[in-house]
Length: 84
Image (cartoon, rainbow, N blue to C red; front, side, top):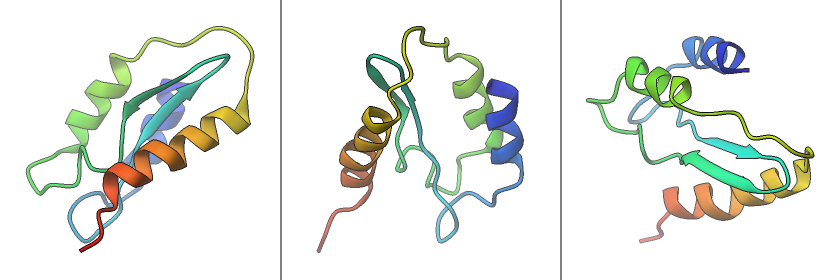
């Protein structure tokens, strides 16, 4: 799974005024590895993102996709977007 995620990241331009990425794991629980605002700065590199992915252990249990998607939108987007 980590290799798959890194291949996707490798094809995306990431940074200020480009694309933002986040990583949420989910099974019976959810865990936000990093949200959209962590790597949005110019000094962030794909190597930093790859390290976060490599350091992430797989969760075991059921696959609750709805929980993962709710978490992604509730946490990551609210942390990224701040009006005003």
